[in-house]
View 1 (tube, rainbow, N blue to C red):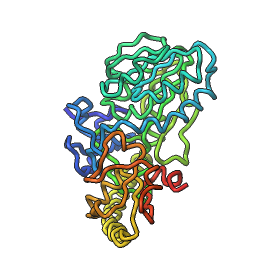
View 2: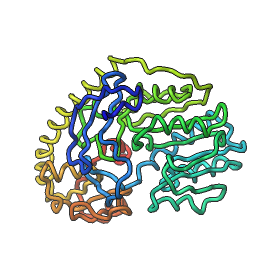
View 3: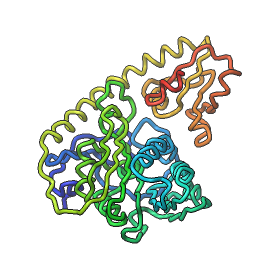
Amino acid sequence: MAELCDLCQRDALQFLYTPEKSTRGISVHLCTHCGLVQSLPRIDRDKRAPAAVSGGADWGNVRYGKGFRTKIAIDAITHNADVNADIALLDVGSNRGSFAKTFLAAAPNAHVVAVEPDERVAQSCGALDRTELIQARIEDAALESSRFDIVHSCHTIEHLAHPAEVLADHWRVLKDGGLLVLDAPNIALIGGDDIVEEWFIDKHLYHFSARTLTRMIEAAGFEIVQQPDANDRSNLFIVARKIARTTTQIVSDWNEADRAEKIITSYVATRARNLMALTAVAAEIHRLAPRGVALWGAGRLFDSLVVHGRFDPTALTLLIDSHLKSLVGERHGCAIADPESLSESQAGIVVVMSRDFADEISA
C-alpha cells in the first residue's frame, strides 16, 4: 500500500532526494498536492544508537538542542497566559528539563506533566516539585481529555510518524481555549547559501515550512495566535489556541509544492558546492597552524570539515565546544575543551565554526 501524506492524506508523494549517510535508508519525498516534505520509511521506533555528532543524516542522540529554545517559549506563555494562575501544563519531550525547570520558577502555582521516553534524560524532571514524569512516547501516554491549560512541544513533532494524529490528541487533552506552544525546525534554512551539513537527518520524518506546519495545526482544531518569525530561518515557533473543531479538507497548494521542490533542488547544488569548498578552508587552517589555531565549534560543521574537507584535526591547538564537552568528550581524536581553556592556551587565532551562535561566540 502506498504511503499517504500525513497532512492532506493524498497518495501524492514524489521522490526528491536521498540524504548522505542515512543509517535507516530514508529518502525525501514531496507531497505534490499540499507541499509537505516528508521522509520515508517512517521509522520512528528503532533501537537507540550511540550519540553521533555527524554532518550526515546519521546525526542524532546527543539531546542538547532543546535548551536553546526555552526562553522564547517562556516569553510566549507569559504574554498569552496568566503565569500566576493554577496552570496545568503538558511538556511533550521534556528532555533534560530546561523548559520545565524555568517554567515552574516563573509560574508558582503551576503543575507540569513531563513526557519523555529517553531513559538517559527523562529523570531530569523526575524529582522536580509540582511535576509528574511519564516515561513514555507521547503517542502512548494515554492522558485525560481536557486536562491541560497549555501543551508545550519543542522540536518533537518532526520525529513523529503521524504528527497530525498527535496534534489532534493535543487538542483533545487541552481545555477549551487552551494554548499550544509548538517549536520545530524550519526547512527555510536549506535555502541559504551557507548550508554545509546534511539537513535531512534520519531522526526527522517531517520537514515543515511555515505554510505546511500552520495548516496542519489549524486542521487539528487550532487558531494561530502567533505566527512563525519570518526572520528565523532555523525554527518555526507557533502559538495556537484550541477552538471548536470543524472538518476541513486540505485543498491543493501547487505554489507550496513548487517552492518546496525548488528549495530542495537548490539545497543539493549549494551543499555540493560548499562541501567542495571545505578543502580550501582546511588548507587555510593548516597554513595558519604554526600560529596556534583554536577552533570553536566541534559539531556538525567541524565534522564536515574533517570528512569532506579532509582536515587533519591534529593541526589544532585547541578544540572548543561548551555544549558538547560534557556529552561526547572528543571529536575525531581531539579532546573537547571549554572556553575558559582558551586563555591558558598558546592559540594565536580563533576560528569560529558555528552558524546560529557565531555572533555570540565571536563576542
